[in-house]
Image (cartoon, rainbow over all chains, first blue to last red; front, top):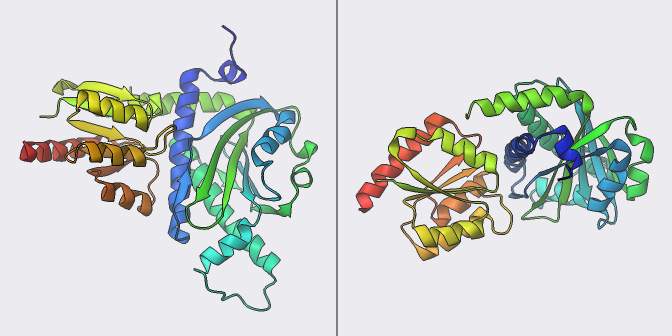
Length: 215
Length: 126
């Protein structure tokens, strides 16, 4: 039987453990976000794909092609687990989140241009989602990670938002992907955690230690 | 007495983790399902004493499965085991008739306390 690319790097059991850990980590993100915004974050089952980094832009496009524009919050993280977190929001999510955070009241100052508010809101929400998810994932795998400050690309057409040379072409990408939407407010998006072959040996051992608690 | 236990979770690893946290000397009989729909069908066919239910699952979510099971059997004892620990999620499932919510990753002690409470409740119903 032919092995898939994922199975060449991870065994099927390792992939299942990683998927369950991702599920727990994203649950933590959703709970942290729901503390700030009065909504229920609807979670879908996360999954894992492994590919050459050069295939990443078209892979991501496949998921976000239905969005007119996208906004991206990006943070790099590093510890023994290191990589890049990309949180991709649908068009208009920034403005929608501003409304939700203000509980429908327009209390912004006249001097705050909407674009600045949108940037700040998306960065703050992105920071909560990425920090909680990556932090929980690292915690479950007994690691500690440090983050770069969030960077944002606001309301761009996909091809202008992610370029072919955004990622190091020599690396393999382990993509942990989950999608989310809010029950109130028209906000949805995807979280991609992209880690490279540098983390694979460590990750395999960390997964073994994690599941050993349950043997 | 709790004898038959149904575990509904799409992740085989999560099912394994849950089983490993349960006492080995109680002679439990396990049945497993990998989504809410299958969980509901198995519930109807085996009438478990206790059901562990995940929420985020394909085909039919745990939210929907709990509603179906409670409609079918209002005394069903369902413990939700989930990574979705948002207050609204917890309130929704408790309002739907779930007995208790435990957060993932499971801790052996939490599960054993839950099991004792479920045992008491079942004895009162019997």
